[in-house]
Length: 151
Image 1 (cartoon, helix red, strand yellow):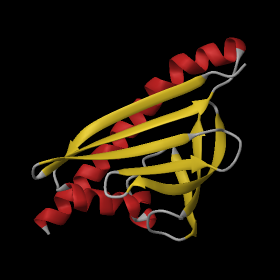
Image 2 (cartoon, rainbow, N blue to C red; image 1 turned 120 degrees about the vertical axis):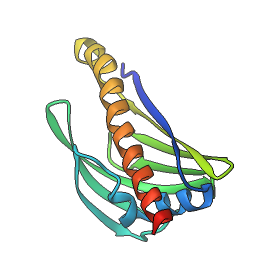
Image 3 (tube, helix red, strand yellow; image 1 turned 180 degrees about the vertical axis):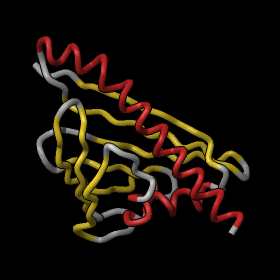
């Protein structure tokens, strides 16, 4: 029996929510915020917001996983969701919350983990590692937003 593994990170971004959301929905731009271990990023369909399909690889937990994500916007301007169309069950949600001239961005992922001993280890290690990776992604997003405002 698989268990859901989840991880999240959040950060205040120094830009208004509408700008931050626009950065996140532009898939080519969004790829600039992805730190290693993400690589080989491609837009297969669309490119901005709902209906886009992106493909990338992640070097994670001793192996490379190729993900193909379909983008939806359950709450346009506030929530962007990427769902793996392959078999991992991975769902990553970006939530944008206005805070005056700044924005709180939360990234949360969940996926079907392994069972048994491998699953136990995965449930301990994966959330910590993803939290660090998402922290780096949010730092890159904040740096980009600051650069645009200084522009």
